Length: 449
Image 1 (cartoon, rainbow, N blue to C red):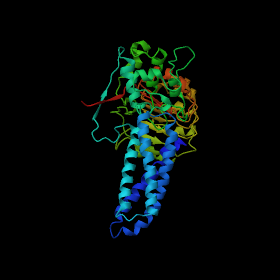
Image 2 (cartoon, one colour):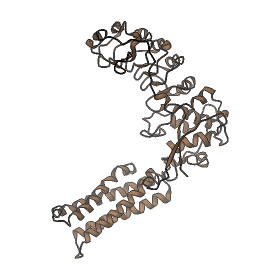
Image 3 (cartoon, rainbow, N blue to C red):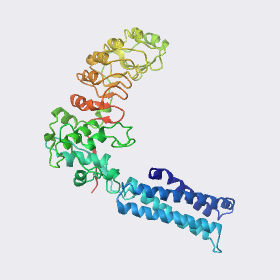
Image 4 (cartoon, one colour):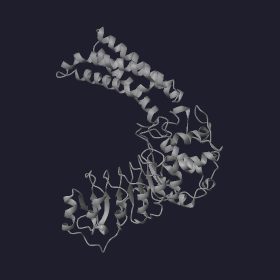
């Protein structure tokens, strides 16, 4: 029943504040006609307040919140439920006191606002509605082999992505990640660093669960950990989770560490090849493609490089590759999503010297076909969503010097193989749908002094 609390609390808040508004509006000549509806609105809001208090009681007993904060919210919630019942009684048996209903609604509205604010503090943090929050500034943190793993890397990760659910006021599973002492205590299942061979730390296990799993950390809808962050945390845990460990103690490759200092969104940026001597394609040459139903556009007006979209052509197949003869140097992006192409088409696709973006999602291509792309040296973006590609096929892409983004949701790539793939290609952004495998560089927020 406790899980219903976040869902039902908005119902009484809206109704009781509406009742107060109508009571105030009812003082005017035009608002008097609405006064008859106020008792019913108050009654429904009161029922909602009682149910919210009951569901909140069950949620509190799950032990996921700091005791003093949740008790204060509980007490105000009980007061709100009792106040609602008393106000309903005043409408049923009105005393001869001027504006008693208006005063009662005003008092009840104050209870609503205070209770709601305390609940918001529990969910979002104590300063989520503060008007004098310290301004935050972002700074890039560059790592080297002498960087302290916990203080300089893991603690900021926890602060950004974990303490909202595992901090001072809220502790899911009785786990707090706001201080190293609390991290080492663990949650209701204790702490296990996973240093014994064959065992995985509980925290690592939760981070590796599918996004759809209720025990996945962080939960669905929250900012997810990147693969590089997970690897760092796992290595730290496996070595005993000491706050004194340095990055060099984790024995990561130099390339892995240097990739962490790249610009944060580097992997998501797609640029285009420089082709100063390439001539634009005549409209006559593009006519067969458009007659076939393709969308063909230049990167910009008069630009020689083209973007081609075949996604709407469900019957597009390997034989249609003949239509691109003579255009090989001009194709910068081609979308073949959902078409009937197979590995055969990868032969002519691999011969596109300026190909930068390639969409092969939901096609029949395999690892054998993907291996043909190893010579497409201008390729920056590759979409393999919904294909049968495995980690074997991904390894063949490690020779591509400009590759930045690979999308793999619902492919056959296994999440447990991604740590090795990421180390092999540390500058590539991989997205499996459940989390982002990105560069380790992050923005650390600090309070302005």
